[in-house]
Image (cartoon, rainbow, N blue to C red; front, side, top):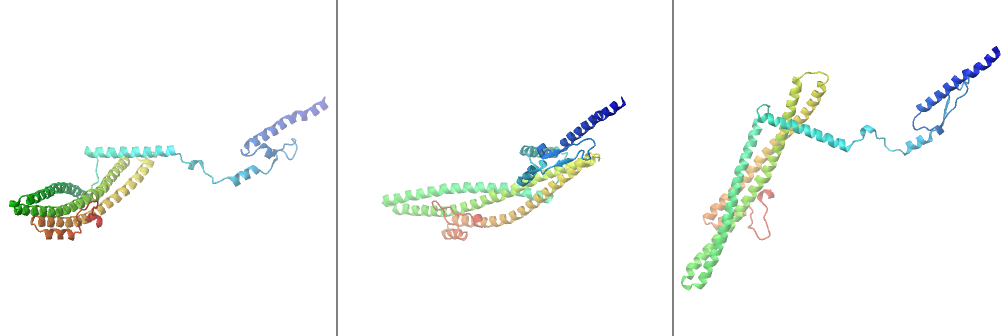
Length: 336
């Protein structure tokens, strides 16, 4: 009996040991990298008493080496940008910025929000806008004068032709019709010369008002938008600073401080740009208007004084050529 029990004990004890080795082998297979196949890795299990129990014979993984030699630059998943997410983020930022600016504008109109004001710069901007309206009025009146003068010159030329025709057909009034014909033709000629000076004046003032001044006002609009954004983010930061400071609010305060600083730099830059443009505009305006007002005065005075020589000399002084068909002389401002 005792011999039988001794022979059976090793058989029964070997089953758990074999099952344990098999379990360890399966666990080890699962722990291997996903790129390794069973055909490329050999796992050998020996007997329970074998000194080589659990030894793994791993062969060379040629597939991994081939993948490394053929692969290009490694791109991390976090670095891949999704265009849809980028657009969504831009829309979110635009909506937030629009909301803050709208709230700031409404607060200012209701008298509740504070507003950053540069008194000296604001005064210069107001003067510029007022001057633009006055220059536009001068421009409209000068265009009206040009139209009326053109009609008058046209009528004078027709009247001169009619007098000349009657001078040939009425022998008894030949001299009288002839004098009037010459006078009307001379007036028409001087009128055309004056018309050239007035149109030159109109072209130069139009360039000043609708190009130079308008360009400066566009920069002013950008400055005013930057000012509203600056005040909106300044107000937002002030409200956060008045609230509690804890782990939840500190990141918001830091982000608000960063946005405020960025908009402050933008506001300062736009304010500097407006100041520079206003300075150069004032210098250009004085130069242009000085020359154009001298031209307008001398041409009008010479025309109504009947001084044809002085009228033509005025046009030569400003390098003005009478308009010929198909040719437009450049304005004085464009030549400069």
